[in-house]
Structures are given as C-alpha cells and as structure tokens.
Length: 580
Image (cartoon, rainbow, N blue to C red; front, side, top):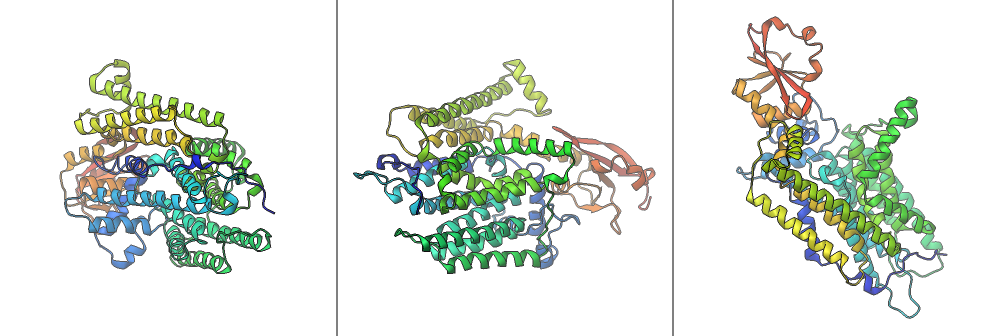
C-alpha cells in the first residue's frame, strides 16, 4: 500500500506565478554579462580557444574529432561543447565578436536547462504519489495546478543556487554537461506522459553528456534510472490501488537502457571514457581530512539555499523514497556528488546536481511550516540586501573616492584599473534595485499564500546581485578576470611579428595570446621556427636555463596579469640566429 503523502495543499495555495514575471526574472539572470566583456580565466578562455581553433577550419574532420590547441588536447575530454562554440562563431554575422557569439549560444543552453528542469518537475509532481492529501470535503489542490506550482518553485530554487552564477555564465563544457543532464532528467521524468518528446530528450541528454566530458556520469545516471524505473513498474503492477496516471512500461525501460548503452559505446569509440577515480580513502590522512572539509564547505555554499530544503524533503518524504518524484532527483543528485568527491573538477561536477537539488527543494514547499518559511524569508532578505548595499557602496567609493577606505580596498584588489562611468549600466542597476524593493514589499505584504512564495526572495536576490555585479562592476571584473591587460602590454612591446615562439604556456595563456593579441604562436622546438620573440610560461621559469640556450635571447621583461602573481609571462627577444 502507498504511504500517505506529507503534502497538505489547498487550491488557494497553488495560484499561478505570472509568466511575465517568471520570464523577466530568467532574463535578468541570463542576459547580464553577455556584453561588455571578454572570456575570463581560466576555463572560460581555455575552452574558447578550442572553439576558435575549430572555427578556423584547419585540420579537417580529424581535428573536429580530436580538438587541439597548439598541440595540446583539452583538459576535459569533450567534443560537443567545442562544436557548439565553433558553429556559433561560424554562423554569427561578421560584426559579432566570436566570444560574444559563443556566450549567446551557451546562454541558450542555460535557458534550455531552465526549461527542461521546469517540465521535468511538472511531470514528476503530476504522479499520484506526489499529490497532496485529498480533503474530506474537497478544496485540495488540483493535480495540474499543484504540479505547475511545484515546477515554478523548482525553477526559482535553481536560479537561487549560488554555485550557478559564475559557472552558469561561462562557455565551458561544464555548462553543456548541465544542459544535457537536465535533458536526460526531463526525458526520464516525462516518459510516461510524452513518449516522443521524452525519447528525443533522452537521446540528446545521454549522448550529449557522454560527448561533453561526462560519459561516466551519463552511464551511472542511465543505469540508475533503469533500476528506478524497473522498481516503479513492479510496484505499479503489484499495487492494488488504481492509478489513473500513466506509468513506465517495459518499452520505456528498454529505451532508457538502450540510449545509455549507445552513449557508452560512442564514448568508448571516441576514446572519451576514462575511469579515473580517486577515492577519498586512498589519500593520506591529513590530506583526506582537509579534502573532506573543503568538499563540505563547497557543498554548503554552492547549493545554497536548496540543500537545507533537500534535507527537509528527504525527511518529510522518507516513507516514499522509492517514489518516482523522490527517487529520480535523489539519484541525479547523488551521482554528481560522487563525481565531486572522486574527481579534480569539484565545482563543475557539483554543477550537474543543481537541477536535482532544486527539484528536491521544491517538494519541500508543501510540507514547510510557516515559521520555517518566515525564517528563510528574513535570512534571504538580510543576506541579499546587505550584499546589494555592499556592491553599491564599493562602486560609489570607486567612482567618487569616498569613503576613502573602501576606495583604497578596491584599488588594492584591482590594481591598474581605471574606473569608467556608463549611464546605461547605471540605469539597469537602479531598475533592478527598485524591482528588488518592490519584491520585498510584495513578499512582506498581506497577500494570499502561494506555494512558491518561499523561494521568490532567494531567486530574486540571486538575480539582483548577479545583475549588479555584471553592470556596475563589469569593467572591473573584466580587468581582474581577463588576460586582455596582460596581452595588451605584450602587444605594445612586440607589435605584430611573423611569429612568436612559446615554451610551457598553459592552455588559457595560448588562447588569450591568440584571441587578444592575434599572434601566430609556435612551439620553441617546432621545426623551422625562427621567431624573433619567445614567451615563457611560469612553469618553466625555474628550469629555463636547462631548456633554452639563454645566450641567444635577451630578457625584455616579466609581464604579470594585474590580479594574479601566478600568471607571470617572461618575454625574450632573439639576439642570435636560430639554433642558438
């Protein structure tokens, strides 16, 4: 027999969140940061370098199946993210900067993630075991209205997650993995209701994730989904109660299994599947404790405010952990968590769990006490309001020099930055702040209870702070996170030579020198290289005399990225014929 649901929801609590308000919130989160900046360090510019290299068309089809950047393969063994960026560069008009074209394409991926998450939660919430308690005299929430309110709450929770802000606006394989994970999540959730669309999403999600650097995650998610769906099928066939809602069939389970195996076969065929797992127990004791502490801190802030609501969902729905609406998002959260603890890409692996965390957080809403909801509101109000005040305060100090202590702090953090003023960005920032004030007034005013109301302030506050940061502070952020200032100084010294030799440059440095400086880079050991200049990366500084005959080169200077001493580049000029 089914355990009773802990959700008690009246029809009055599932009134619809106005679509125009939800769309404006998504736009306020997606669009800021697209214009007025270049690729940031280091994964952002590194991934863009591979996309630009593919867009140039050198190397033919073989290069598309094995992306290279000056002989280096990408750190993330992926294909589709680089293809997406290269196609965006190719189809963009000539007046659109290549990096802007890529950012627009990846912004659409984030928008697709929002859409897939909303519909996945909508179909999960429509299942009978997710529905609220039926009242004796009627008045309980109608299934579709309840599902829509839960889906709205999930989307708000996803936007509110702190870890999504920067990584969700970068052009890296991690964002493509997030999009394909959400497609896979939607496909499995919607399969009993929308067979064709769900199957297409399954294929896109599983194969896309496998070819975006996450084949192991794709296989684990797929096999876990098969087990969950099979258990759901057995439970449905053995249940005496009559359920009018569609359920999974053997054909649906076979489809999930087939797509999973196909994704694994493609990954193996292209050499993308690597089982490189470092279990925490295999590390030395002191390092293990430090790693555990670091991972715990990452989990707490990265998934805030979804994680406490997720814990509450697991507790309140503990008698239905095998139900579809709990088991699926729980599995989609556990697999990325496992990847976070066993790989070196902690933040980017944890990013894939955010749709599942948001889903779990949404199912906490119909079980929350009013006091808990009020506590979340007040904490969110204080946190984001104080953060917005600090953003405004330091920006005013940067522009006016008052208060001097705050202005000095900014100057120390962003050395060499010359502040600029824009009425356009100021207008957007003021409008966003006014909208936040209106939202706070609405939330604290007297109005009918809505199921999604608890997550309105967290989502609005996250969107506000991201918008303020990428309007008021975008020039400073671009100066601090971009390699453009460093490359600009090098360009002033070398001009536009026929080529520049390189030694021990990282992928981000190579991409930055090519994108910002338009340099023709060649390895120092390349056959026939007779370049008048040599740029040396920081990793080779200590052993440079063992690698290069320095008698043939004159050191011109050390060029530092303004906000990082670890990004020093050494510039040498040739003073002897090649071979010296």
